[in-house]
Length: 304
Image 1 (cartoon, one colour):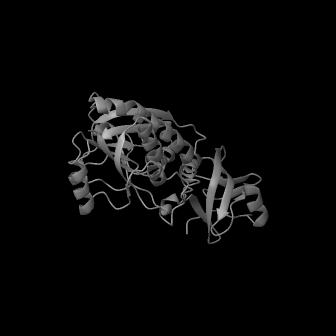
Image 2 (cartoon, one colour; image 1 turned 135 degrees about the vertical axis):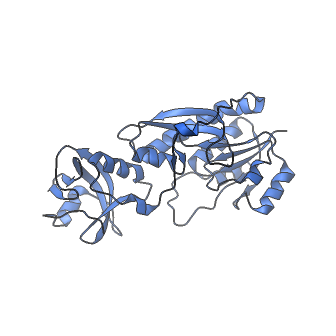
Image 3 (cartoon, one colour; image 1 turned 90 degrees about the horizontal axis):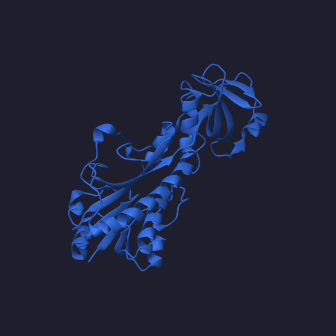
């Protein structure tokens, strides 16, 4: 028997579970998360998909003692994790008879760790991917089964790239699952020295440092724009979220507003054309409307 336990959330979780069901996988149970009231829920519900197919769902931590006991009763062949947000402990990893695997949103070993899509965009990468690998105690460090690259265009936001990675994840599962069942899946050792690790991000990490180059600031903005919390700065004591911008040539003091049509701001190298922004607590508006609403002469965006 090849019963599997799925740990999943978000669009990647939805698409991967959908693909496994399409292939007739025997899913014994889904572990997922309750949606947070403080998070913008823009993605599809793995829980609803499972319930439509009669799959039992639990939202408690898979590592909880009562869940460990339940898993030993089920005795799954595989545990598969798709964007599950809890670190799965060794006690759980030891249960499946044929292995525990994770689908990670980067081309491993690069961008191990948290929010890999956002980090890849923020760092100006031109490619990333999706990787299926065996889970071990160390995060994103087990043998690779399969992976798929995606390209990152200079105009892509993190949302755009996440959609590409979601498609790549479904492709990886479509290829890898038959090989896992047949016992013919690859075991490619993870070369951690050739990769990188990044931690999670908080909304406060979106603060714009105007001493950085226009391209670096642009990458931050597109890396945390909608549906993420956004990159922000301050003007006259008010927090201003910059949702859309573009780097252009020119020079000026970092943070200084040098023109209003278009709205150009100095950086450490080049100028940033701000196109869409929002004073916290108000509606998002175009840069033109922003300039019409405020006297921006001899003003600078600053840190608090």
